[in-house]
Image (tube, rainbow, N blue to C red; front, top):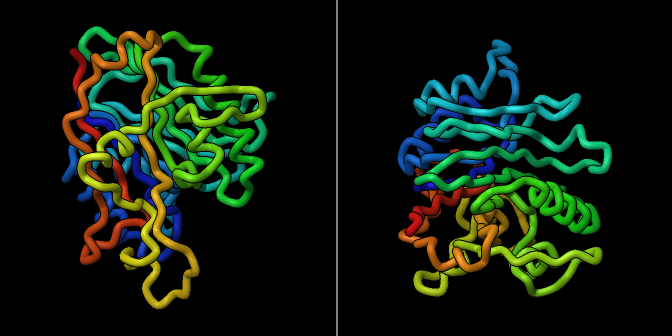
Length: 259
């Protein structure tokens, strides 16, 4: 099974051309399920629904999209398998400015709960609060395996990453997720997904930041004894061809199987 995440950048900059390139990138990696962030709701030219265009060009049978309140943007999941347990959390009264959705799919008789999130880019305090709330929210559901995908707006030195990978606690909470890029990167090296030096989006712009990996796919089993029953076959960073500009972020796709 291939699972991917991709922030497709809701910006007017070269939007129509980038939308075609985004679909081409998705068709290139061919994930079974892909989590999208910054998905524009309606076209500013003809008011068409953007997610419908993406689904049409990528030929997915199932999808779930919800836009944020009072914004022309939202989150989406596209899948080749039926989606169940679909919900977002911005209507929950106990969650403040916290953008996440989750869906459930079944693979080889196993229930997978997939979370798609986009954390606040401007405030580390908000991100810390948000990630604890999302993990708590997902833990209320029963599944065999849990996946967290999206744009965390945090790198590997952050408190959010350290919390998720069992290196520190946050707000009295602890977690223990496996970062596929960290596991795969031990063998192949790690590639940034927010590339200030190589992505055409930043050409001729003075950016005093180093490239970072802030888009992740993490996993944890309901029963820790099943952790080693997940086989990571391959991990691919896509959308990083400087000749084909799609987004300011690169995407990640992992190929896994279950014993």
